[in-house]
Figure: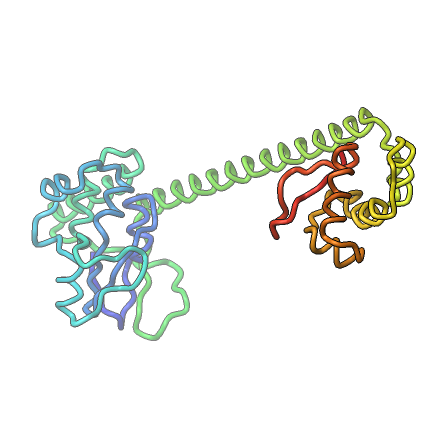
Length: 290
């Protein structure tokens, strides 16, 4: 593998190379000299290693692993922002990544291992290994050459992309099933609501304040002018959930003295025309219909 600078295109695209090796897209830092570094945590996770510290010590020599701060500091670069980049994060270079893949037991790494073995065998037999130029050259600046991806890597990429496609299809099926279930639940809810509506007794028409006062009077309640004035003031609010008026408020609205308002409220309570159920937010007694 030829590490190349920014003036030339990599013989094998590094993203495809890493994807074929690990089965996933992992974070990558490319230094000004063209070398690539990868967060060890990303690589180890995708390759199924469970003990990062021991794995790095067992598989990757110190010259192929480094902390993020030392790697970026060597080029006077700042620490990347976001995505959980930390100064003490362990990185591995391309050689370190290959060593980790070669020690991996996941089936997905086998095509990549087969290619690495072929490279080693070819170098031992022929003394060198080189990529074949692509039969069809894409549009590129003059003087550049595109290379064909080795068959083992191409097969690995195809298998991984097919697996990703199947996963996407499975997720879409799950989403479709969830949407179907949601629609079914909505239909069931609508049915239950209609059934519940049919089972409820027919509500009597809402009373008007005048009808409420007439109802109280029909129960032989002695409705004096004071009681009538207080009851008329309470009635509209009582018919809409409850009345939370202070004695002083009723006194101002009716023109009665606070004592007369108090006596009228007590009479309405004694005759079970109203019932106090606590106090309103303003501290006034809160009355409702019994």
